[in-house]
Length: 85
Image: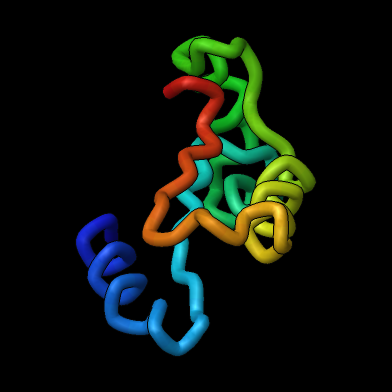
């Protein structure tokens, strides 16, 4: 994913397109329950250095930042949203 992000970013930056990636870690969503493991996030939070799982709003805020003019110089980055994991 990193190589793809960097390669595509370099390929299209001349057209004014910025490419970045977001890599969420353990995020508190319903996906765990629908996969048959409703307690997965709770069981694994001890392996996350920050001591808790992430929230979908935290991922969304990072995406919004990357889409904003405040991130106009951010190109080819992979932002890990993983609580240090």
